[in-house]
Length: 119
Length: 116
Image 1 (cartoon, rainbow over the protein chains, first blue to last red):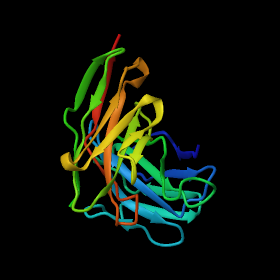
Image 2: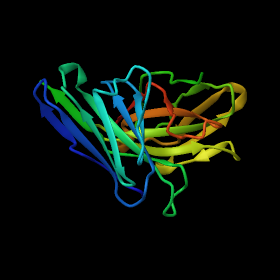
Image 3: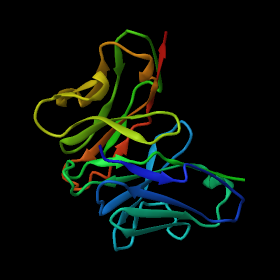
């Protein structure tokens, strides 16, 4: 099956620093990737839609200058949390939409998630 | 606007017992419906989905769900629970005409515990 890999799986940083999370589709191409945030014991909230070669589309209430998204290639999207603060601590999950390679067109595949803790 | 309601944030069953996780949705158009499973500190794995056709959908790990339009429901069932089924389960809906499966609206999730 299709694999989406996130790195790092866990990261701890000091307040005020920036953290980059990578999302890679390992065996398929994804023109669109999505970033979600999940608070403890809550559901996933879509943060932004990342399109290869263009600017990300952010959901209402998500600060685009704080959560920088770059979709540099058909297999890689990055989320950078800039000047992180404790309230940014959360579980961040990416997903990628398959567009080729014999996979069901349009099906979403999720990464393993990245747990960010800001001290 | 679409929404998903999962009744029961926590369901506990005995091993071998029936699993029933409830999901109701609201949508102005016929939706795509999904069930995902999440194990601790992991991403989401698709269990099954309904798009068109047969309303009873079979998924992985012995799970199935039935789309009932009249009840706006998509309940997830498994005849016999296994210890490995213990996880968080999310129901999600997508606007059929939205064009983007990424616009998933998730329910709040139901944590399934399986007792030996």
